Image (cartoon, rainbow, N blue to C red):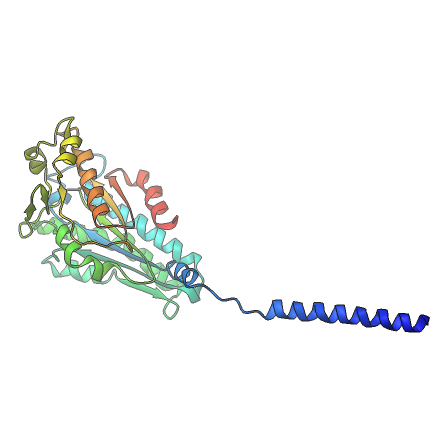
Length: 304
């Protein structure tokens, strides 16, 4: 009788043990299915960074001198801060996950072919097929040195044709700066004013241009500027209707100091413009010293 009870107990133990093993095997062997949303999130870690340089007379050190640091040299330092952030991003990644891009644009393209050649040499696509420490070092050195060569050549030429920023957004930004499965970032280097002789459009109080003269003409140079701007709907004409896959960082605003409200007006114009075009994320900064801007720039690129 005792042996029979022992056999029954042993059988029960074996049944329970076998059941637990089977349950464990099922849990271990169950495949992990990555959701579409999670997949997109992972792929968006690839950066696609573009620069849009305004090579108008704003960079002329004779027309717009600055004793503490010339404005074109501030641009050069801002570009270096962005490229340093890009370099940090790459060196943190595993090789198999690399497929990141950085490039530089103008609109219109400069007539100086040397400038265009240099800019083409600043176009990089770092991926698992070509990445080496030597390539990363080359990219970092190129962005530390070559942008200054571009500005030097533009200043020597002294042929400032303006920057058609509005037209770039209208016809090129989606093709040049936005790609699927990337975190797309456009860095615009500008004094905040937009003007090109071939793109002067006005629809009501909306325009494709903004200059100190225009701001004075619209009487946005007194303490009531904001109410007037909102009520009479001053601003930029939207250049496109959906930039929801693009982040934009505007650097270098340099408002006319004759109007104490100039900076606020310019910032309002840009922010309203980005809102109208459904830009995913943006920030607009004045031409502060690069030592003060470095952290702000790197935080924008790396902390998202």
